[in-house]
Length: 503
Image: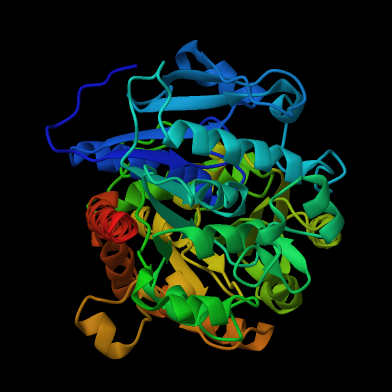
């Protein structure tokens, strides 16, 4: 594993439960690969650590055993593997614990869609290893200055590190407050956690325990993934019961907008497309529409308006709003909708039933396929993202990059990244999409009507709208610089704490 890095760079251990292309269920996986890579380009010694899922072990290059950890009270041996991501020279550590992570498929749920019953034990173990690596393993000859944890699956690591005088600075990123790693008191007792943690100042959360609360309460700096969502998270409406704690954090908590990986998401170089294109050759985009229609078994017609949707099929993402809208949408004629995702079984079935009833206008693929996602972004004219809340959202940024106009609800990161189309924003060339406010089908329809009107009646302005989105800088570079400054704050805070303790 290469150790060379620019002099003066921070050593950052980036901890995540998933990372593209090793394993992916959502946007966290994209961030976990892209942000450390962007940090390395800025001279930081950033390294990734995730569990050693079977699919991850198959993909990591130059994989080898680095350390036998010898942890007590575990089911079977635990070791640390190391290698490189398959598509870039990003060092990655894999936590090898077969009894916990040697499971194919979704990293969090079984084949029925229910959470693995031992998820508390699995991610307790992961956090224990994170803390061990963060404190320095002799066999690694490397120790991080900053441990950057992400979401509830890593939330106990800052808790375990808190009492160590020589610990690194800790940063905790909340990608979605709704996923809190909440378990009952019996689970707390079964995990044999220190009794003192069952308190308001610990990880107790409304008579249960929350891994997420642990990460928030015990880290030096905490952020979420867009400025607007950080503001929303401090309110009772969006704070998911943690708004009081987030308000108490003051300046320790803020929003840092995600970026997107311009190497992976580039319509001019994307190998998943039927035809590459850029903002100056938008007429070539139609070839991808035909390929998309063919892939989804829809009638091939480049003059048909195609809408796309990719994401978890859950109410948070507004999938029910799309379903409520379908009768009015499909009766317009010459409109098609393609959907890729998985999630709530009832919503999946409703979509599949509608696709059976409207086979020439609606096609649904349950599951996630990366190449298909790229084709949807390139082949669609409009991208639907009517989320009830959205911490950041990546698909709207992919859509902008690919000249596919997003229709989004004015919430979280969607409001931070998409500029609503008005006469003024068109004239100033700032418009990039269509926003609506209320989380209902009527409001979504209003935004869609505005989009249809511009698409059919003002083709020159529509092309300008596409080009505006493709011109917008959504790369990781600016975000990585903000994280770099955030790490400096965390290190300064940690240094001040250490000085106070030794005084």
